[in-house]
Amino acid sequence: MKNNSIMRTVGLTKQYNQHDVVSELNIDIHEGDIYGVLGPNGAGKTTTLKMILGFIHPTAGDIIKKDGDTLKIGAMIDNTSFYEHLTGRKNLEVFAALYGSQANERIDKVLDIVELQEAAHKKVGQYSLGMKQRLGIARSFLNDPDIIILDEPTNGLDPYGMRAIRELIIKLTKKYHKTFIVSTHLLTEAEQMCNRIGIIHNGQLIREMTTEEIKKYKEQGISLEDYFISMTKEGRRYV
View 1 (cartoon, rainbow, N blue to C red):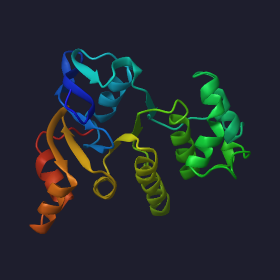
View 2: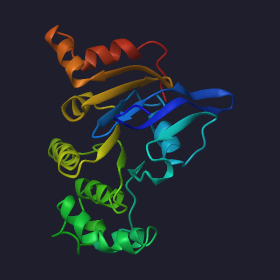
View 3: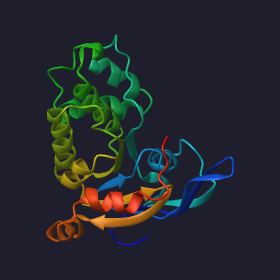
């Protein structure tokens, strides 16, 4: 692996009914990244994340992790589902039981990390969507992961909630030296939060960019949105 790589995919492919949903995907995640996986709906973003997590098996290709199986990954994928009749703390206790005693001892710490201490004894059914997203991030931190994977973490939030989640991710990266992979189709969010992005279209990686490259395009009068649309409008899948 490259010196600053924490994980990379090599030729990662997933087929359903002989159709490539993800095709020969090569992405390289660096330590300390907030790596944005961008793409239209149906581009293969969630399928990619689920393969990285081991939820589904690739048809072909490899996922190479620094330190192999000792690399710990936390995740918030699909909908943030909780037991709404239980408190935030009780929910974390349920999930911590899957990881063992060390995770249970981290509950107070992760509640502090996402600033939900005061709401910990409220039933999750009383939480706003933004609070549920924060609780989802807390849950992803229970095993003290090296990489945290978040699938559309700001989806459905109002501008205040989106900013709060974005600022939380940036804070966690800097303060706890974590690496994030964040899937999104919200280009402004990615531009403000991520230091590197990979654009996926029809299951293929069509471009990786750094924030410095995005800034150069903006100086030429080309926004990330303009660039994204120009790169993904051909063969667009409507799903």
